[in-house]
Image (cartoon, rainbow, N blue to C red; front, side, top):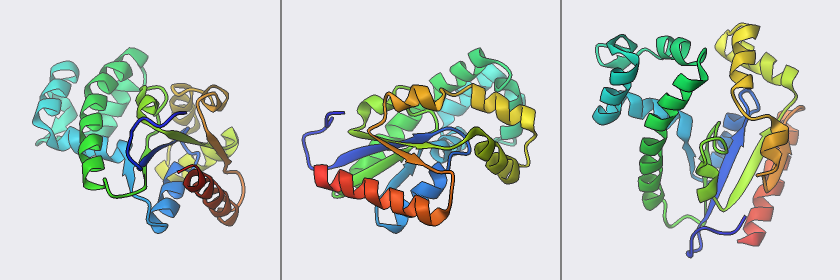
Length: 204
């Protein structure tokens, strides 16, 4: 993928399916001094703080999704995860706001040679088009399910529904510049992250 900006900053997109280990990789990158923008976390913050976005969500999903101005994420998830069209509606509200917020974040980090945007649906949303390089974290489905089950205390059916709403790894690989397999130890994962970082720095 060609660089989308003329200055020396390289914008790296970090993605992978639910339970693949994106957050673990992000934490490694932060420890190496690489700024990371977590799209999913920031999206949740914006859904609680951006008045325009809150009003739009209420207009589509009803006032009950907010309790005293705080988003009831469990209720909203139960509404949208059973209906792909509703997920699309929600994403169409949230993604433009996340994109604006990300651009402001870039300005604050414009002296950094590499910045990373972590997003579960980086490719599905089209946000990958604004990145210079894409890192994809892949992991066996059984491993992913086990991680999410432990993390969220979710049942198998709900986890598989969330997995099926995302593109498969095989589909995502077409967009990736670097692929990191995360099926073994944290030490192995850390070494793979360092390898990819060094490759990006060499290109830079």
